[in-house]
Length: 114
Image (tube, rainbow, N blue to C red; front, side, top):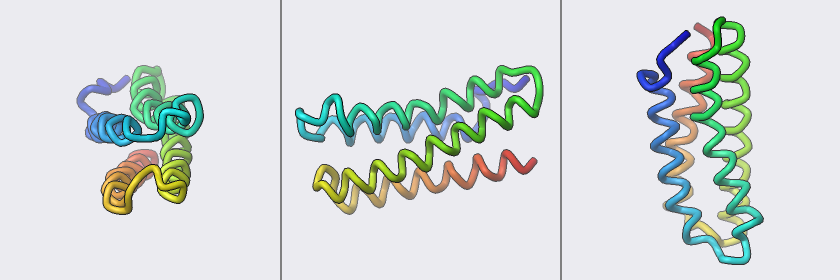
């Protein structure tokens, strides 16, 4: 069992969640139950699954939840690209969020290989 609060990947994912929530607060109101909700659920899923996996009793279970977190990260990447294509998010903000996200994706992948 790992202390998830000490994991750098969890801390980075928490920072990304804050940044994404801030970005989605500017999305159109009519997207509140559409893409905004989907993006927010995806970003919350990343640190949540890291934490859940860290609390499990085996490395195999932890690895499973890291896989789910990684899947959520790729889902989020797709949703952010859609948001940009719909004009909900600018290129600069998109690139900033994608840089954070890709760092987390690499970290999770590297952690899974340990």
